[in-house]
Length: 107
Image 1: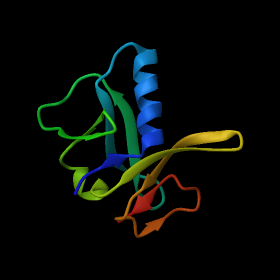
Image 2: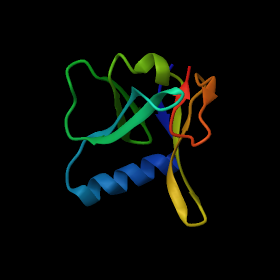
Image 3: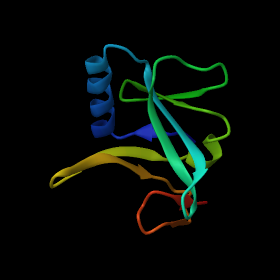
Image 4: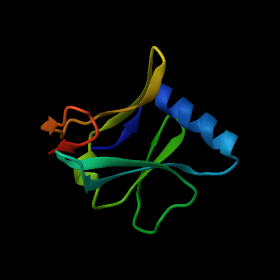
C-alpha cells in the first residue's frame, strides 16, 4: 500500500514549500501520546533520512520513518476548510478508535 495526499493537500504543501523557500516534501509519523495512545506527527522535510520510505502524490514527496509506516499504511492526508477552520485531516483505515478531541488514536 502507500500513503497519499489528496490533490488539495498536495497543492497546499507545494505552495507552503515555495513560500518557505526550502524543503523536499512532507514528513509524516506517529508518536505515543494522548488519551488513545498515538498521535500524528506532521512537519515539512528539508532532507530525506537514510531509512525514510518515500511516496509521491500529485508531485509532492511524502517521507515516513519505517516504525510509523505500519500505523499509516493506506492513509490519505487531506486538507479541508470548514468555516473559519482549516487544516489537515488523516483518513487512516487502520484507526480503530479515536479520542473525543481528535488529537490521538488507537490501532
